[in-house]
Each structure stands twice: as C-alpha cells, then as structure tokens.
Length: 434
Ligand code: GH3
Ligand code: MG
Ligand code: MG
Image (tube, rainbow, N blue to C red; front, side, top):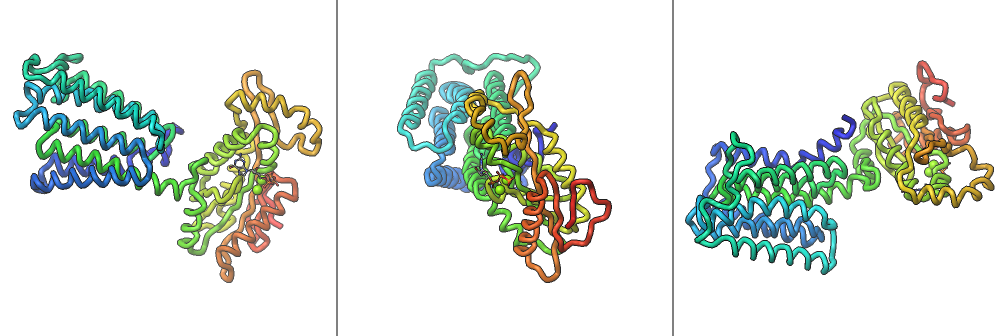
C-alpha cells in the first residue's frame, strides 16, 4: 500500500486524531471533572480563537467551518430551548443539523483554501441563509414526533444520530479521507477530525456539557489545523512534499558526527523543461522526489534548491550508504515517468523541430515511445562526503558538491565520493571514488 506511507499517515492522524482521542478519553470516561461554565468558556474561547486565526491567515475554509459549527450548535440549543432533543422543535433542529453539517463540510472542501473573493462569501452566506430558513421553517411545534429522519435503513443498528444522517457523516468522512490521501493537507485533516468530533457531540445530544465540549473540540481541531498548515508551509516543500530548505538548515544545526551527506542533482533537467514544458518538469521533480524520500539506510531527503536535493545520513559513514544510494540511482534510472496532460504532448510536438536541431541535447532525456502516453525518464548524479574531524558541516557539503561536480563531468548518472573519504569497500560499477 504505497499510498499509505508515513507522510500520509502523519497528515491523517496528527494532530486531529490524537486530539479526538484525548477528547474521547476526557469526555467519555469522566476521569477529569469538567465544570459546566469551564466547558462553556472553552467552547467560546476556541470558536473566537479559531475564527480570528482563520481570518488572520486568510483561511476561508476554516473560517466558514467554524461558523457552520457555531450555527449548528446554536440552532439546536435555541430551538430545543431547554426542552431537549427527544421531540418538538429541538428534535427537528437536531435532525436537520445532523443531516446538514456533514453536507456543509463536503461543500466547504470545494472552496479555495485562501480566497478574498466576495463571490465565495456570497455563496456561503446564501447557503447558510437557506439552511437557517429550512431549519426554522421545519422546526415548528406541530411537526410529527419524533422527527422527519426517524426511519431505519439498517434495522439492527440504532444510534442517537438518525441513521440517514449517520450515513451522510460516514460518506463525508470517507470523502475527506480520500482527499487527505491524495493531497495531505493539514486543513483537510482538521476538517475530518472536526467533523468526527461534531458527530460525537451530536451523539452526546448536541447540547449540554458533553455535546458543547465536543463542539468546542471540533472548533479546536480546525484552529490547530491552521497552525499545522503554517508549519507544513515552512518546513515542507510545497511541490514535492519533501522536507524544505528551512528544515534542512534546522537539521544541520542538530547534526553530530559521524554523518554522511549526499547531494543529488537531476541530469539535464533544463532540457526536460525546454522540451516538455515546466509543468512536466514539475511532475518529474515530484516523482524523483518521491523516490528520494524513500531512500534506505536511515537517510532523510531535503529539497534544497530547484532540482537539487540533499540526503543526510546521521550516524553513518560514506561506506555504509553507497549501496543505498546506488540502489536509488538505479531505481530513478529505470523509472519512466508518464507525462499526464495532453498539453505537454502538444508542446512536445511543437518543439520537435527545435529538439532535432539541438543535437547535443539528443539522447540525454530519453523519450520512450508508447502508444498511449508520452513516457520519459531521467537520471541523477550524486556527490557524497562524510563528516571529518576538522571540517564543519558547510565544508563537508562543499566537498560533496565538488564530488557531484566530478560526477557531472565524468558522464552523469553516477555517484562520486569525496576525495577526503577512505576508499569504500566493495565499490559498485558507477560508484567512483577519486
Ligand atoms: P546538469 O545535468 O548539469 O545538472 O544539467 P541541468 O540542465 O539539470 O542543470 P541546470 O542547473 O542548469 O538546470 C536546472 C534547471 O532546473 C533550471 C530550471 O529551469 C529548472 N528548475 C529549477 N527549479 C524548477 C522547478 O521548481 N520546476 C521546474 N519545472 N524546473 C525547475
Ligand atoms: Mg542544478
Ligand atoms: Mg541538474
């Protein structure tokens, strides 16, 4: 299950999943006594903090999700009017909210993450307005008891949240999960766990101490997803998902000898861009990065520049890691990348003549003819250097760069080890120590 790697699992469960677990432990076990007014304070504090954070970070989706939570909770509270949710207007409000809340969250995932457009606000306000009218119009005292959603799709299964709404919740959660596996965005994770918390809140009755606490927890997860998102923006490279240059700088501060550094550069990458367009170049970068991200031997890959990467191997000597890097080099060499959109293919056709004229570029980026799609493959060159007693990390990197330079000049698609290192045992064909 390649798509369920560590990064995806982290983006799914951290921090929302852990927070929900804590909320369930605290609210479900009654181990910690929670005063009613403490819960109310927590609820309003996180709603206000979440709203302010979302506004400050221009996060349209989080802002609207917080508003939806607030309205949902207040609709039940207002229409139940202290008489509970077993029957009457409180029941109708409860059922409407149970149905509309997950539908709203699905709708909100389609909004752009950041948007200052009035159009987006208009559609959101219109949606909320119609929903409020719907709830207010249906939640009259003369409505049938116990409610309009009180029918069973599965006879053996009873929950407080009406069954049809449970299915909508499950559908929304699956939908958000699929998006998370695809895009690993912190905000999607926040929305997923927030929805799960709101579901538990409704299961607990929607109002009252426990219901309110769950709704507060739901808003808390949304607010923290903004912080998580800012962290990812700073420490994760947006295009490839690898660790960013900033994280690399942080990692260098913590690195203690012995360690080995490998600098990796894609060969003739400029001609990939020139031949197939920048978008294809980006796709190739992503695919190469995904291979680098899975390097063995305890290595951690960082995107430090455009098509330049560095792999750090803490507690390893060069001789310990050359086999892993050689495997990586071969893996990339043998991968052919499918160019996805038709635009690149059209561009490739347009550039055909130009390519033919560039005789010196020919053969470097191998285009493999396939009937259905354009396939291309790239290679990488690497330079390796290990820690030395009298050198600081910057100098070690410089030696790795020099080794990379030699790899480029001796034909590319190869690994060179810095001259400072002892000769590694069992050298491979393309791992050269000079
Ligand atoms: P060499 O084998 O000597 O490394 O040749 P090269 O063409 O890869 O070397 P060079 O460093 O001259 O080219 C790097 C190119 O990478 C230049 C730039 O257009 C491209 N590039 C840098 N960042 C990105 C990016 O984020 N996306 C895309 N598509 N291209 C990028
Ligand atoms: Mg380069
Ligand atoms: Mg290059």
